[in-house]
Length: 273
Image (cartoon, rainbow, N blue to C red; front, side):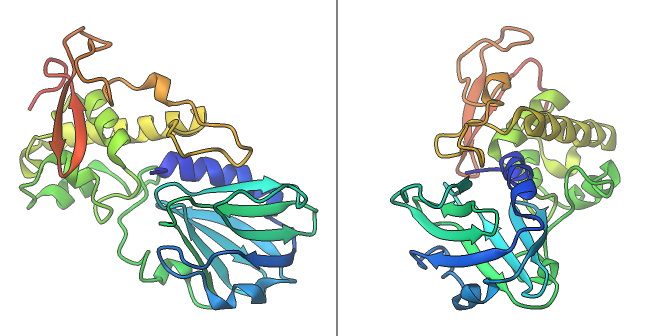
């Protein structure tokens, strides 16, 4: 699944090509996504994009007169900018033709994505967004916040930081990598982790996500940049999908377990309970 860095990379790739551009034509080739594509999507034709924002793993496209588009890439979705004459791929479900001559296409083989038109109101108050925790790269994500969120949680710290009500956008890959950098075992009980160690974890989460955004996102099988090129942060990973391989720091074999139905990786020497 595209995680926060992939979504932010997509936002940065798409933004300069859509902001200030008008929508000439709306084509919906398939409405059956995780939630049906909004019937009102056609009404944005003739309107102009004024901004592209990200909240957690959602993209918000601001329109001058017609409200907003709320987009989620799901398990395998991507946004691409192509020429309108380019052949449609099998799973290109939506195409917005811009007055620049480019088309913004939403591609989603598994159809777990979301492409909604919100004609009015505050998109941040939408039911999908209203209960989300702080952004990990914003100032309100602090050790104090994480300590308060974990104070009554007996679950593993990895599961706590993957809870979008605690902090958004820390998916499975980045949770494993941040815990390694913080020297903290994934199974450590959240409420027992000291505030100084949580402070290190906050810093590690920020660092891993910022590095991944800089590198262009993690290479996943289904993820491509807006320009069609894959991300390449995967080569820098320390523990994820490295079961049995030597730790890059101490050479101890990396261990693996399933936690919360997700694969989890750690170094038993570098990471303490």
